[in-house]
Image 1 (cartoon, rainbow, N blue to C red):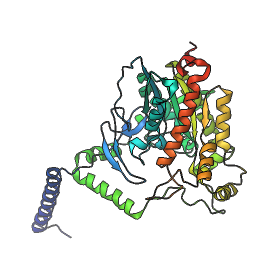
Image 2: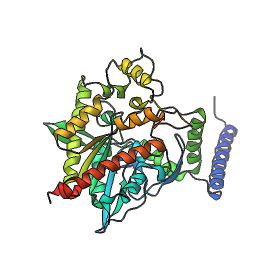
Image 3: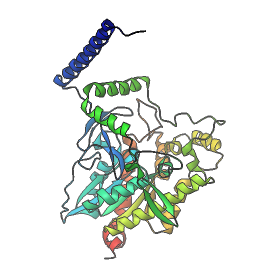
Image 4: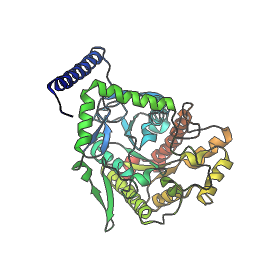
Length: 401
């Protein structure tokens, strides 16, 4: 069809009208103060992380108001200068530590600070617990977070929260490819950083982020899509695990001794990262505590449900990753705490779920406030033990004083 002058004029008029309409909507949204700026950016060291100073409401699982500090994590800003009477604990981890699902006062780290501040072993000390948790992080990113961000705050103890439910796969590119994060490899027995993501960032992703940062229309569109997803309901990836005949999901292989090259690599990388974090902690005069976090599959208060899942995996126990990590830490004299046995016992005895929320699924997903409280009590008790051992503080013991 030949484009006549009249038809061309109509096309131009339509384009002008569309641009005018979009501009009018954009202006109206700005005048009304409606904005949902993007929360994330790709840091060239640790990968995808929050923009400093971001504030937002999280409601996909549980509910919380979230404020992000200048280190791009969910916490207040901390002073770099460390008073002589202050004892500092830096907690590294993924979404279980960040805990978007609960109000900040109900979170693991805040409750640890409260418990330890009233602990006689810390008399005369102000206890500051700094939360460096970030959703989606693996152990490699947590190591970089310690080295590049947490170390400068001079922690006395570094707590690494390790979650076998996804940390192994997050640590290994062979299992979980991701173009916005660093990975580590083991070559000749040594860790080697692969930070090629910083050089290969997609211009399309960067352009989309910049447009979203400027356009209120795009921000409202993205927020509407999130709201629609919430209305449809949220369910963790592991919500249905009762079928005995289905294939194993990626992270379920963590319950089995590694047999494939990829899973052997994931274990090797993870164990080398634990040693690297321990070395880095000692380098800054801190003591490392590895905390093995329980997966929701391991924690159902009904033993029959847990046995059903174990039968599906064809294993006698769901504790293989916990026991192996604990054994590795003992072998290398790294203090460690397995939260699974005491938390599972508590859930059974009290008939309560420590994972899950009313707006999602009880027993699935992340810790609820009860889970955070119990976890805080158990970790605080372990830190008390470390503090009082041999009459030395953990940092003194680490430095040999």
